[in-house]
Structures are given as structure tokens and as C-alpha cells.
Amino acid sequence: MSSASSSAPLPKSQETGGVSLRRSRILSSKLYFDVPLPKVPVIYSSSYDIAFFGIEKMHPFDSSKWGRICQFLIKESVLDKNRLVEPLEASRDDLLVVHSESYLSSLRRSLTVSIIMEVPPVALLPNWLVQQKALYPFRKQVGGSILAAKLAIERGWAINVGGGFHHCSAEKGGGFCVYADISLCIHFAFVRLNMSRVMIIDLDAHQGNGHETDFANDGRVYILDMYNAGIYPFVAKSNFDPELIVYNAGTDILEGDPLGRLRVSPDGVTVRDEKVFRFAKERSTPLLMLTSVNEIQFSHILTLLGGYMKSSARVIADSIINLSKKNLISLDSPLSRK
Image (cartoon, rainbow, N blue to C red; front, side):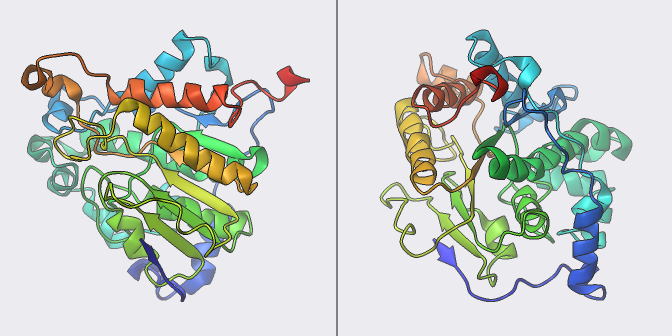
């Protein structure tokens, strides 16, 4: 767990322009837009899924889980696909709110992207293809995370079926995380939503080193990062009174995941998510949920386990269904409830 007490340093690209440049970029962004009431605050685009020539399967992260989460919810008639919210792609100016010019320029080299994505063959591809097949999906998810904060304030909760790139900071990507969507959505909330206190609850198996780097000296952000199974997550509730909670709901804590190694059952994930949403609801604090990265592709380890195991997409979908059943979220539009 980490918290801090002074203003965060600006990326190198903004040192000369200062806070006013960041603020100007945020105010001129098109990522915040009005969402019609018939829509539910679940954000997804078919562009989220990453697929190019099967190369993406060389990384253990399941880069098509986002679409399958929605497919499960739609198939079980708990979510109408026409009520999903389609986000806009984060532009270069949007990304410069947090990232430096030099970092974004480095992504024009396929080698750099291959290192961040941990998929060496990506280095051999022309960068225009890497931009189209990998970075564009990431930028759409960034747009979703940013919009989710606005929807959470308006509706009480929101889920971006994507995002949660907690290994990326302003100046450095890694661990399949190219853009710092958590840092970006919080800075947008500071300016566009007039927030002054934001809590990050990061329950992915891995440390959120990206957002921790960005907010290490910013007292407006309280970070509760649990990556040890023996730590109970809600010790922060009496120490900080957040106006918004950003919840990074990683499922690499599942039993059988060789990266997370925390051996939590699918039911345990459901209980965990329910506790976080109940924590927010009891305090009337808007919450936005991100589905995080680093979940293993279970198809890669089924032969080792010798049996069936639920995919992370199925586990996430089941958890969202449970949240709906417990009335912690509503997947009906406000108009249909009248």
C-alpha cells in the first residue's frame, strides 16, 4: 500500500508549459461526451481485442478476453449489446496529458513496442501495422477508462471492459501496458470532474508500479495496492475519504495462474469484487472498474493441469452477473426502470 502528500511532477514534455498545458489538453479533449440514458455504464468496443497473425498468443496475456466477457453477458441475457457504450480513441494530445513527447515518439519503433508487449516478433513488423493492430486497441481502451470516470460520477458506477494498464507510467511502459490509462483517467477527473481525492484499489496479483510512480508524491491520490494474499484490502477506509474509486480488478490471482501464484478460486474473485463494490456503495462513492492485464491464457496450461478451468473472461462475466444480482450495479437502463 502506498500514499503520499505533495503534488506530482509533470512529464518532461510538460515542464515548460506547466499545469496550464495539461489543463488545456484535458479541457479540449473529446473523450468526455454525453451518454444517452438508455445506455448502461458498461464501456466496450470490438476494437479492444488484439489479434495479428497469432503473434499475440506468444504472450501469456489473453488479448481477446474483453470481447468474450461481453459475449458471456449478452448470451446470458444480462446485458443488451445495444446498451453498451462505445468510447473514442485517445488522441496524441490526450495521451500527452500524462506521457512525454519522447515516450510517445518511441512507440513509432516496433522494437520498443515489442519490448513493452513482451512479444519479440512484433519488432519485425512494420510500425504502421503495429499501430493498427496493437496500439489502436490500447488507445481505444484508454478512451474507455477516461470516459468511465465521468460515467461513474453520473451513474454511481461504471465498468470499462478493458484498461487497467497499471505497469505503465508517464515515461515507461512494460508488462503488456503501453499507455497509463489509470493515471490519465484520474488527471481528467481532477480537471473535468473537479475531483480532489481519488482512491486506487489495485487487486491484481502484480504491483501497480506504473500508477505508483506517477502519483508517488501526490496527496490527492491514495493507493491501496494489494499483491499479497495475506493483506486485507480495506484498512484504508478510515484514513481517506475518496470522491472517486478506481478499481483495478485483476484476475491473475486465480488458482493455476503461473504468473500470479495466489491460488484464489473463481468464487473468491466474485466475493472480492462484491466487497469492493459494497465498500463503495455503503459510502456513496462513485466507482469505476477496470479489468486489468496479465491474466494467463488458460488454454496454454490446460495440458499441464489435465482438466477444465474457467477462463478469466468467464470469471469476470460471472462476477459482473453477481454484482447485478446483488443490486450493486444495474444493467438495465434508467429509462427501462421507470
